[in-house]
Amino acid sequence: MGPSHRAALVATLSTLSTLSVLAGTAGADPVVPDLAPGTTPATAPVPGTDAGPAPAPPPAEAGPKQPKRGDFDAGGQVRLPSGPDEMGQFATFNWIALDLKGQYVVLDPVVIKATVPLAVKKPDTLMTGEDPSMIGGATVTLEARLPKPPFVPRKYSDTEVALVVTGAYMREGAMLLSDKDYPRFVGDFQPGFTAGTVATIKLSSLLDFATAPVFVYQAGTTEAATAVQIPTSTIVKLGSLLKVSADLGVFTGDDFSFRGSNGGRIAAGGAIDIKLGPIVAHAGAGAASLLTGGAYPTISDSFYVDLNVKYAK
Figure 1 (tube, rainbow, N blue to C red):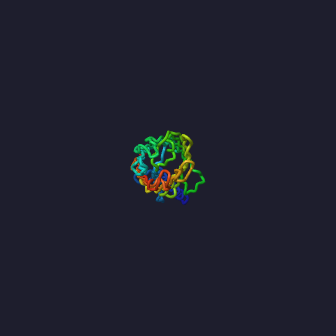
Figure 2 (figure 1 turned 180 degrees about the vertical axis):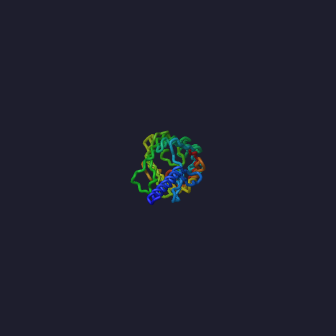
Figure 3 (figure 1 turned 90 degrees about the vertical axis):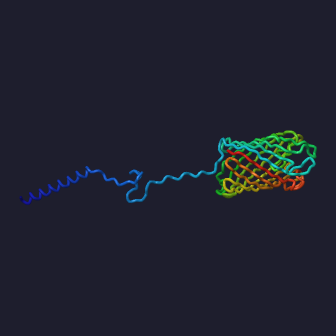
């Protein structure tokens, strides 16, 4: 065999060997890397990296329950204000007031509130010759929370402001009383209304400041009564179950008079609120007036205690 024939034979054998290798590779099963239990090729780590499938995001933390449509609460506030007996002597248990209260959330920003004040214990007659009544009347309040304006500084972004309008049908002059005064319900029923705002300013994660200034008008037998009431509270929240507050209120007499002899009062006191499930309990004490004269001859004559229990859903 000549040299040319030997070279042709070697080339032929090399070609056949290459074809055989390719045929064996095409028929072989693909190599699949071992997978961890519970994984699929779609979620398996990419070779050369340690990254696995992205973990599921943690569940969102539940915040405090916000009032929503259909929520309501109802209860009663028992007040033990200092007031005069038939002889004009002031003492704590001469009068016992019971304020029946309730509210219903119509829409998320709109709440309707109702109050029926009662004097469940009172003198039969006063030194003035008046016969106090047990029923003080009734009030219905519409409270509408305003949207938060965009220009409020960030540290006050949790501030809430609501417009408040109240319609009332009460004993004459009863609308000028605060919830710190003894329930002196005398005279005929007269219509009236109040209008103002309620504001809660969050000063820190623990400290809030609340105020509810209102204008008061009530018709009268001879003339109407007009006044201004400005209750305020500085509130310390110790968790979601306990709340402590310092209260200060300015209440004018008729014709916007701030003088004690004309019915003006400055109330000061403190309170504690405890929430146990759906039950909210409140206890407070203080002086209904730091101004003497008029309704209270001395500051000690104006000492009050109030207890409030309500069911909140």
